[in-house]
Length: 209
Length: 333
Image (cartoon, rainbow over all chains, first blue to last red; front, side):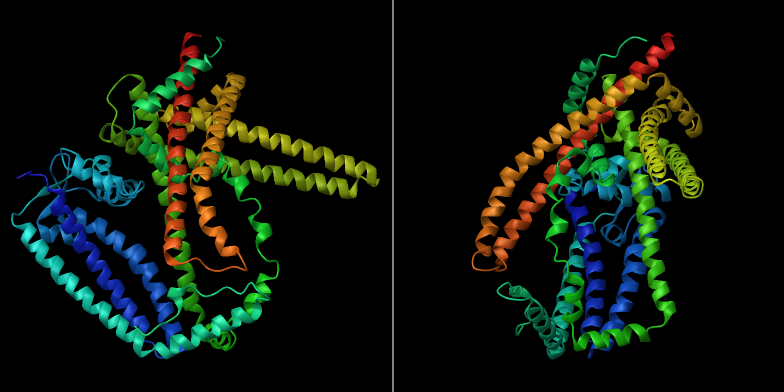
């Protein structure tokens, strides 16, 4: 079956991937926000920096290339039953997957993500990243829309819970952040002479959330 | 050697750039990844005053900023093991290196695809991403190797220049005793090195122009392309310089005019929004104003990128058509 995946199905698949990434980011944020003093906050910040460098910046992109080549797509695509194939409708090689997911995605996002929007315009449902790498996204299993929507709703729910948990963690350590922030603002105001004292940005002052 | 018809080259390039919009994608990629914004617009002039506006005593002021928290932060920094910092440092360096390699790969691919696409367009073939991208991928490795060869030779030339400068300085300091004679000696050397440097840079740019097209259009391997590029540059030095000047002049003119137009269209509304906040001392703008300013800045940046994309396609087309003229003249000879 070489039916091209519709833009809607691809959006659902992309949403699943982004929500999974969002879940990881929120877990990291909760980890940071649960620090009870400055030293613990700095320790966790250092660990976060290492995770961002090695996992988010290096690990996840390489995982995306490997999984696309080995299984036909990222988690979102696998859940929705769609697959990335080459011009002969076979699994893509690692090189082609790298080109599509790295080079192609960057080119597609250059001008307000026009390369992704192109999927809706192109008769073969190809974005710029697909054209550059000569790939198609085809439907391998039927019923992907329903499973995909259910996965999106579930992940949205999880993310919402995590957001609430993050806010709760920030609130429970509000005094620590207020102390650090007011110290910083106070020192800035003391060091700048005369009338040119800037007011802090309204959204930077911790309020009762 | 027959003279080159620069007018028809420019006319044809405008036509090719206008009608083959898929090539703008490669132009945009090169414009963003080559950091070529300042080469084609007046942004450099606009930002030249910025360093003067930064307070000179800023480092001193920032040490007062954190107070007690600074002490805790300082203690924490000293308590963290060195291996952790090395790990983080290596990770950051690794990321930067990977990004540089990745940018080089993208640039090489985009260059190859653009040169191939312009060639197809000139032959009135259908040009789109599907037809041009594979040619860019096929020539990517050779273009990267050529880049390495060029960079290596550039580094070698710089090393030679530094070595010669050292010898000149030694001779000037030890052999020449009179101050006036020393000044003349160093002055002459400085003039010689600057002029030679400019000449070598121009020559290397010319070699790149020819070699990239030899690699993509004539399937030359990298080192042969460099040698043939050098031969073509020497044999057609003046016409190539003229083409380069025309390209640069057109690019600068359009870049400056477009930057001025954008500053008027986007800058004036932005200034009107920001200026009231400087009345009676500085007040930070509200969120909606901040949002509008951000949109204006993004529009300015993206418009500049789009103009650079068009200029990149135009310049590449000029060089490709010029290259074809030169090669056809060589074949006639």
